[in-house]
Length: 200
Image 1 (cartoon, rainbow, N blue to C red):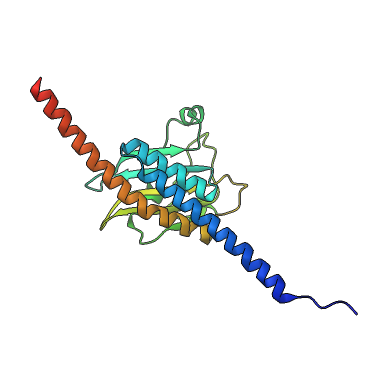
Image 2 (cartoon, rainbow, N blue to C red; image 1 turned 120 degrees about the horizontal axis):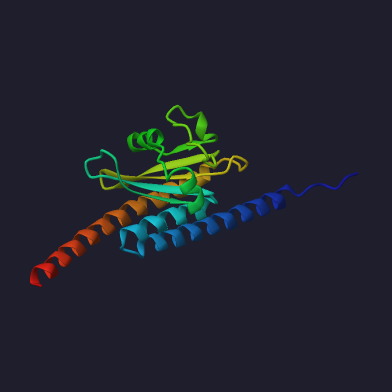
């Protein structure tokens, strides 16, 4: 007779493993948030946000677009993952405006198994390495959408999970406050420089 399987022990072990993974994800998120809020220079803040998001979910590429105050376009755009030679070869970083526009208008994140399947997708430029899975979220500050954060993978990588989405949504909430603070810092710095120039 085969011995009975101790299902309670197996279940307890699985619960313990999941608990350990949850604690690890929480630590990673707290570390990512601390990296985002520690800087004030806007370019540094944006780069920290993208790199922190990529690290959280293991993304190959990342980008962040800051929307102009009138909402007509992008004030800044940061990309991480493509080397300068590749960027130069494809003629500079090109923003997928159709998809980012959908993110700006969306009330929630966009998670796709294949980026090219989305109706808002605009084709890749020549020599672009191409991507597969896509995860994008809008970044808010108060009632305003101040930017869009996107992450993507090589075509051979598995898609992002619901858990990945939750982590990036949580990070985006902090990112909005960090961007707003960095903008205020920029304004204050410009005013101080103007006062100094007036005195000289």
